Image (cartoon, rainbow, N blue to C red):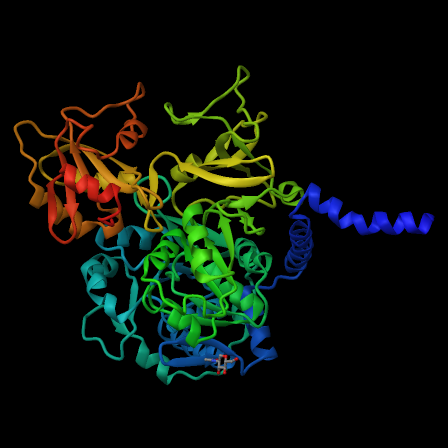
Length: 615
Ligand SMILES: *[C@@H]1O[C@H](CO)[C@@H](O)[C@H](O)[C@H]1NC(C)=O
């Protein structure tokens, strides 16, 4: 009888657990994975082991396994190793690199991006990944942030390099271009030197002083204000991002499809480094193509894809086909997918586990929605919170600052309420800040949050946590907005607008567009006295200096720009007012693709609102 009762209870136990927490098994798997990662980090800390060491171990373990497929070529782990040896030797001889010298890479997605990074790792040199869309002043600024002595550029970027060459020359920078010859004074060809170099392994002595805290990479973020900022990532931070694939459940027989730019964290850390950690095959593409996406996945037996929200929507917007579900993709890893797109994506392309992640390149704490709950960016887990303390605090969106209580401390919001996400800066959760930018680094630090002397990383993101512990993204505050997966720094755009001769003041902000993720750029301008808005001049300037995602799509002319009591520009109110000509009395302009600014009409507004005109 007792045995019978016991059996019944035991049999009912899973049901009871399930009723209390339907995510029990996934939570348990997360717990096990976290303990595994914690132990690995412990070992890595004790005896330093880099992603490069991990790569070399995989080369030894499966030299003939495919490492990378790109266009018509493919490379095994062993071939990749040899290719990078050649690059390292060419750079050692011709750039005289020493351990610790930073090298800037200005290159699109192609295998050489990876060979060069591996080569630099073999020489103990941090790599700085420049966004290949930037030009002139921004390019020089990014280059100088990381104090690189050497620049390596792709052949198709020679013009951009020549534009800033006089300054680079003045500063004694060695400039290499990935071509076989180059006649320009001050630019050396590199491809010929790589071809001639030996592929013999390099001595680990060359990188003997690298440890877990030394700089590994500089990755640029537009962060909150001004020009791009170089987030400094040490080896510890690189490892933490690398483990995202492990949490997401990537296996050693997976094949990952990578098309996002390698200079960003998503592709480089979560994609490439994670792939190395799991010893898997990468299918690399120079850029996203909606029409080739699924064909590529079928052709290369892709099982894991990376995404940003916009990409998922583009995929959903392609014409439906009979073979939409005919592929082997089982996991999608990324961030920024909206709930409606998520549901549509699953309906249309089948049973794919979408693993939405949240985190900033320079941030110290991130989340992973390992459960696959539609719409959430993460899930609270006690172990995660223990290791990575964070809070959502009350935020005043009018004053654009956290609310403080009578003692001057911040107030944690209750569950279900929106708050500013802040992560405690500590030994295990450091914030390395931005290279050569103390002011911006300090600006991301929030002090005396819950007690005197504590310091938190201010994410600038408003999040919400529901009763089940799922975390939802609500909004981004302050001086940045996201459009097409890129951060747009409002002050940088404003600086460019101010360079136009008739603009007196400029206030740049992002506005929501129905059916689109993120916010599109809009600017409120005050013109100089007795000057007219010259749409051609603004367009020419914006087109010359800003990448397409950062160009203000709408311009609003105001007699005076509204400021706060502390003379900060009001962005929230303007952003809420949007771009509806029926509601806004000020002159409004719309940037028509490849044409220029034209007066905004009700018809354009309706086309956008109804989704007939896609931005
Ligand atoms: C994909 O998988 C199929 C069946 O498993 C196999 O026949 C084919 O060769 C694979 N394709 C590639 C590019 O590896």
